Image 1: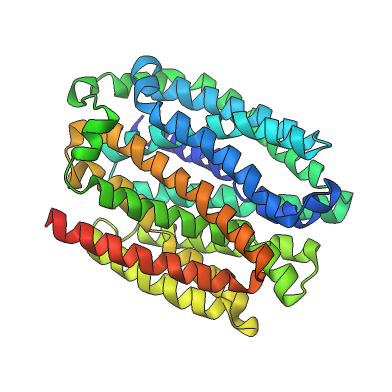
Image 2: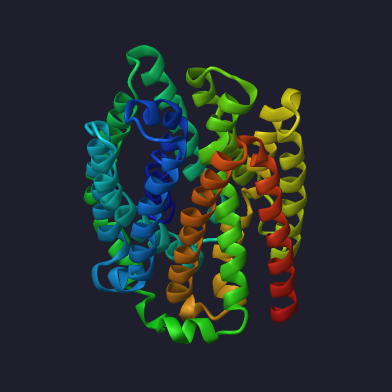
Length: 379
C-alpha cells in the first residue's frame, strides 16, 4: 500500500503540472486571437495565482476536515472544469473568469500533497514527486504545439488537457479510502497555527522570501520562454511553443536525478549548488547559439530548490507545525508567481523582451542573499 499510494500521489502531481506550461506555450497565438497585448498574460497569471494563494492558506484547515485524498480529487476536478472553460473561451474576459477556479483548484492540492509527502516519505520521494510535476509540465507544451500545428487552434490544446484531467479525477476519487488509512495515524502529531503565529517562528519570513524568489524565477522562466524565443530570436511561434518545454524538461530531469542523492546531501549544499547552476543557465540564455541549452540548465538548476524547502520544513521547524507552515510557504510561492511574471511582462513591453535573462539573474541573486541569511539564522 505504501508504494501504491505513492504512485497515486505521483499521478496527482502529473495532473497538477500538465496545465502549468500551457499558457506560456499558447500565448503568442492566444493574445493575437483574443486581440489583447502580449503583457496581458500577466493578468491571467495574477488571477490564477491569487486563487492558489487563497486555497493554499486554507489548505491546512481543509485537509484536516476532509482529508488529503478528497481535497486532491475535488481540486483536480475543479481544475479540469476550468481548463475546459479555457478551451471554449472566445474573449479575454471569459478566460479570466475561468482562471478563478483554475487557481483555487491548484492551490489546495499542491499544499496538501506537499505536506503529506514531507511528513510520510523521504527526501528522494519529494524530488521524484516534483519530477512528476515536471513530466506534466513538459508534456503540456507538446500537446499545445500539436494542437497549434495540426488544428491551428490553442483551444484544442486546452481541450485535450481538460479531458486528461477528467480521467485523472475519476481515478483519484476511486482511491480516496487509501489516503484516509494513513492520515488517521498522524492527526495527533500536527498543530494548528494562526498566520500571525507562523510569521513569528524563527526563520519563517526568510524562507518565505526565498520561496517567493524560487517560484518567481521558475515561472517567469517557463511562462516567457516561448515569447522570448519568438520575439527576441525570431523563431516561429508554432516551433517555439515546443521549445518552451525545455525549462520544464530541465526541471523534470534535475528532480529525477536529485532523487538518487538528495537523502545524502544536506539542505544547504543542495540549495547552494542549485543557485550556481541557475546563474550559469541565465548567462547561456543570452547567447543565441546556446539559448536552448541555457533553458534546460535553468530548469536543472532550479529543480531541487522547491522540493528541498518543502521537505526540510518539518526539520528546519517543528513537524507538528509543518501543515500550517507549508500552507503559507505555498502561498508565498504563488505570490511570487503572481508578481514576477506580471512585472516582467510590464517591463518587457516598455523596454525589451531581451531583458529576460537579466531579470532571471536578479532573482537568483536575491535567492542567494535570503537563503544564506536563513542558513545563519537556523544554524
